[in-house]
Image 1 (spheres, rainbow, N blue to C red):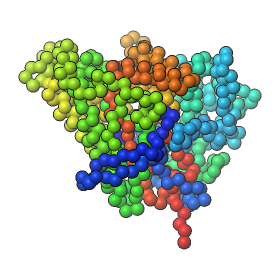
Image 2 (spheres, rainbow, N blue to C red):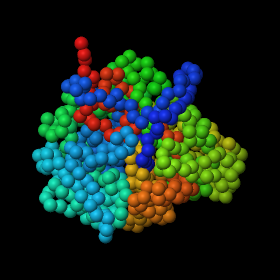
Image 3 (cartoon, rainbow, N blue to C red):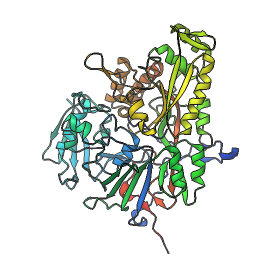
Image 4 (cartoon, rainbow, N blue to C red):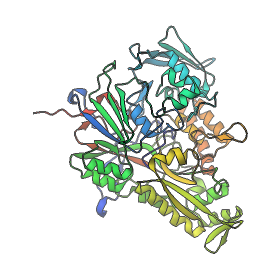
Length: 567
């Protein structure tokens, strides 16, 4: 599903090499030509070749309601797509996943001490201001740390990774110098403060949780918020003339939330200029044949998976989760998903590292391949006995809910394949289709599902982006357990300890060793069943520049626009 959760996967240090090639089935059954896999594909052009003006119409998978990206309900790819045009980020990534300070906001950032504690000093751009006229200062950084460090349970944060390792965020020589002192070493310190929200957004739990719900009150980017249209499900941004950086080429960007099958129709009809196709072969084929349209494809730092809810009544028994995994043939699911996309069917056997990344190890072990006999034994041990064609325990049939978003044929096909594979084990799988706008907020995040298919979005940071996805739950008042970004709702202290070791390790080789050790334990927990590294397929108007399949590269929204017409 293209409505993907952000608080996810590591992505790493190495993009897919341009030398790699892939071939696959093309629409109509022809054998597709071998083509190089690109690290990014955005039609990069210098600003002087991009014309001033114009409105870009950008399709989203849904119409978000929570615009605080650090909130559990806002930690979503569509929110990031919009907020990347509006908010500061301390650092930017290029297509090689090399990280550098974003000079529009941060002039320099460096480790200024390692003993007795790690200290990072940021020098801020004095021209940077919020849209309410306030300067961006150390106070904004300090407020974000206070909100995201995990000390106050009233803040419904998606993840506390990195922020929980900070001892203090203080003013340096003036308001434009930020001194961050870590209580524990944190190798991924460049992942922090991106995006940065104003101090007002983080001042209180109420502000954090509610002030950005159906509102974007303050911005600081090449674009500013213009309007919502809740009926049309659009968010309109306008060029911000107060922006201190290079002037945005576009006049406006209109983001529009649409169901998956409606997005390709809107693109074909000339109502959208860009949208992420996701792994849909019919949409891929239709977009390629749309007049004036192209499909830009690159190796995504993302992976497709099935998440298993460890707290659901039927899956709370680890033996049942393991049995269901052993009943599945992942390669068949992957081949079905990728058919017609000119992409190799290579299974992903790691939750943290992509196949192409340095340090990748296949850690699935015995759970990586179908084993129906062992699956049957585990179900027997869990008390689910075969009665006729069904598994029954205490008079109740073993029924599993596979929740999918509406309008996405890919997810429906995955559900039907899983349904067929589990039937011989006596497991009855029901496919429940829910509105795409409710898929995360009303089903996946609250744990109202048994199995759910979607994709995790990678970042260039090996540990910090994935820690929250597999971190153990935190016990609150009574028996309440907060899982934050761990949507599979299973974990262990041992996994947490290994991930903390990886996060504190400044040697990348040793860090990856800890990651792989953690990954072997994650596999045994059956939180996320990985399928494959995804292709990034983005339908774009052929005359658009600096937008498309970005891979690890952060888009520069000020440079996006339509190619100059030359007589």
